[in-house]
Image 1: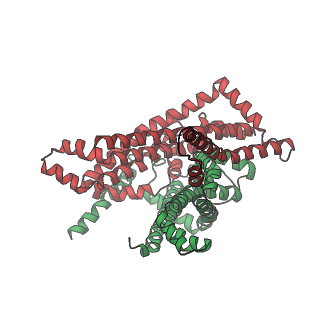
Image 2: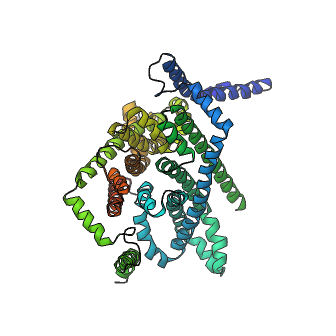
Length: 278
Length: 253
């Protein structure tokens, strides 16, 4: 539909063209504003429900209370402190998990023997949902920081390994043959052929790994933690202060969006860099 | 023969692990309260299957998993097709959908449990939510991926709306939809176990069994429960892969 309207807006010459550009812009802005209708309607309904006391305040806190709690937690530093704890956990786990994942992926991707020995076990390993590991990890590691790092790292290892492995195996054999013709050494093949060719897959695995880490983090913080953004929600739930739970949801959503947007941006930069290099 | 030998290589690692596990416990090299001997896991498993509520808890978990998956994937396919077909639906719902998708799944549980308690209703809703996102997203992408040329041919033949959906859009989007359903199935199982861990209720379930085993420090039961959870996940995965393959045979892929 937009195509039709914009083609109507385009006028042939002079000032008309500027009108067209301006029209097009407002048109586009108007279209993205459509996306705001639903959240605003939900917010309105929420406020209306609170005003007319449809449900108890313990079950549905007023929007302004959520906003107020968010401000208070922010001013008191509670929010940043808990968020910092959570993000540190993510950081360590991503570091550990993706190192193991890349190592495993490269090993299985490059060596037929390693693949024969490791891949069947790895495939079995991936069948276990990450959350399933946690009770057994608690037995061995307690409920301290070690548990969280271990559990989140496991969540990272699986997508990183799978993507790395597939990225390497799917390198066109023609590339490798050219390298053979040029009598590349092992390290040259690795650095000049395998790494650049598998880079998009490596990064995509990394991105998935971070998103999985974010998922596992919230789970483990809800299950066993005394700080972190997930704990903030458990705490609010126990005190029957649902405004804290909403604050937690909001912050988790915001961080999720920020992670997703920045990783997608990096990925697109990586792609354009690769195309420029060719 | 050499092929068989190579296949055997994959068994080396698990067998070695089993052997080490057995050896360290049999020789008393480790605290056997913490690292339980394999034969004790088998004993507990036998007792649990024969006398305990093993089948009952599997049944309870599968019920939650499958009903949540069904609800979530029907909703996901519907929304995906709607967003894929109508630009206005996409503009209207898309931004909210993409934002909500970024909220880590388990963060919904405190809210859901406040509103619905810790019973089956809360768990099934959560499982449905977990299956909904991947199904909706993949369906949307599949429907959006139908080529313009095909749509024009359909227009030339004056397809009705119903024909357009059943004869063109659903068949050509089916690989993506099946991928979404497969992912949804994996997520639903993870969500089932996760919800059973976090929403402790009096009911039975595999996750409940494991988490109660942890409270009682019954490590044998935890190990057995974990293995069962992994096995069921693997069976789901296997079935989904086979169905996907069979349904896509007509594409000659």
